[in-house]
Amino acid sequence: MKSTDTLTTLFSHHLWANLRLLERCAELTPEQLNGTAIGTYGSIYDTLHHIVTAEQSYLSRISTGKRYERPEDEQPMTIADMMDSVRKTGSGLIEWAPKVQAGDTVRIDWDGTPRDVPKTIILTQVINHATEHRAQVMVMMTQLGVEPPDLQSWSYFDEMDR
Image (cartoon, rainbow, N blue to C red; front, side, top):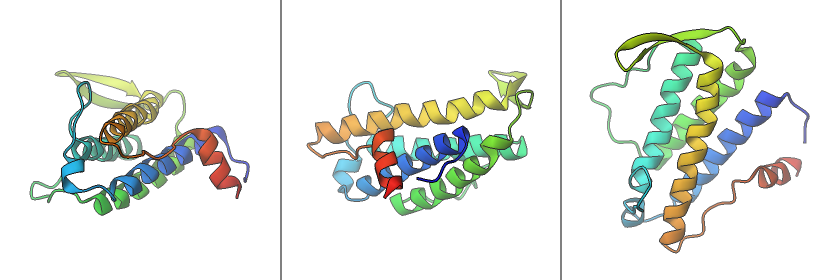
């Protein structure tokens, strides 16, 4: 495995984990994608969509300082669309994360109050948010009797080391 800096490794694993989960979910039936579990965000599809659209927003804040504006006439995303999106946002985060400096901020409307939020907090949120929701999707898959992918860092290391 090629040696990279810490942030590149973290965000490369993040992209890999998002893609592995979406690849596995592409095999699910529409009924399975609509499956839910108590204590999760929503259906498998809704949770995946939430991961993807949140990441679009996070990358936009990091790279432009602006909120991501979704087109009003945007069609519902397919799993393939979601995979394309996370490839773009994941690559963007891999590029941008090492550039973010401790003092870099972005102005965000925080419950009606504009606040300067450190970009480092947004990067932290990217990882935590997706990890939490990927775990929820894997719980729902397990409850449906579907084997979820192994998204551990060890599996990532094994795959990248080959």
